[in-house]
Length: 162
Image (cartoon, rainbow, N blue to C red):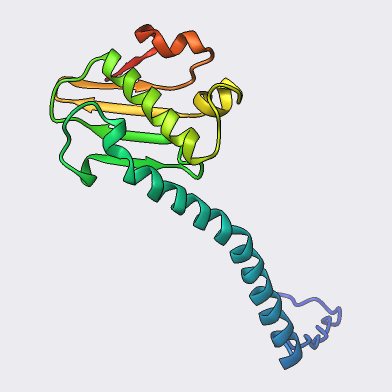
């Protein structure tokens, strides 16, 4: 094999700058992350405390909401930031009328807890944002997305759960 007579190119070695951060840069980054965490906590903490206080009030009034026997605290749950989802398990068969009654009572107690008046506040603020699930020995029902006061008396607005 014949080698080319052309001179070989010399590769120039390039000096890369150091990737290490200075101590002051590390301190600034840590301070920024710390302040960011404090701001997030300051925004979330009041919302969480108010939600939990209202949830405790609702939990203390569960017996007045339920028209049937249940096994205690493990039989129900209140969820979402606005405490707008209520699920309960009955020890007996339930029907659409029972689910609707639980929905009405939960919404009324929730409205009282939140300082809402079902007579004067909008239907949506009291009833429209709430979801109630009632499970019984014969299946379950969900009540949600009601649009008008007439819906509160209409078992046809209650959907069976599969």
